[in-house]
Length: 235
Image (cartoon, rainbow, N blue to C red; front, side, top):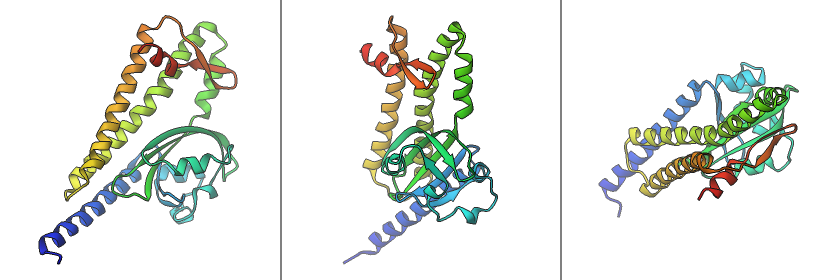
C-alpha cells in the first residue's frame, strides 16, 4: 500500500524534474551560442535564436518537432547516429552542409541529462573560418609552431572546459529545483567533472615535461601538436 509520504515524495520528484527542465530550456533560450534540445531519436524539442539565425529563419515552428537530419547533412553518413548515441558527453567535428546550402566545418558538443533520459543538449559552432585562418597563417614557420600549440590547447582544453561548465550548470539546476534525486547519477557527474579536470592537468603537465613533440593533422594543410600522446608520455 502506497503511503501519503511516498505520494508526496513522488510529487516532489516530478515537480523538481519539471522545474529543472524549465530552467534548462531557459538556459538554451538565453545562450549566445547555437544550442538546442534534441531527443535520442534526433527530434528537435527546443532551439534558441542563434540556431534560427544559423538556418536563416525566424520561425520557431519551422524547426520544432522536426528531425535534425532535415537541416544538417554530414559528410560521414554514420556521424548523426554516433552523435545521438551519446549518454554522457562527447565532442566532435564534422564537415556539414546546411539546409540553406551553406557548408563548412562545425563542432558538435553533446551533453546528456541526468533527469531527462531521452533529452540531450547539443551545442553547435561553425569553426570553418578559424580553420581557414589557421591554414593561411601557417605559411610562416615560426607562426606555425605557435599556432600548433595554441590550436592544440584550444581543441583539447576549451572543449573540456565547455563540458565542465555545462555539467556544473545542470547539477546546480538540479540542486536548485529541490526534491529527491538519484545520488549515484550526481556522483557520476561529479566524477566526470573531476576526470575532465585531471585530463586538462595531464595535458598541461605533458607540455611542460616533454622535450619531443609529435604532430597530427587537424585539417588538410595544417597540423597541431598531438597532446594526447604528450600527456601519455609524461606519465
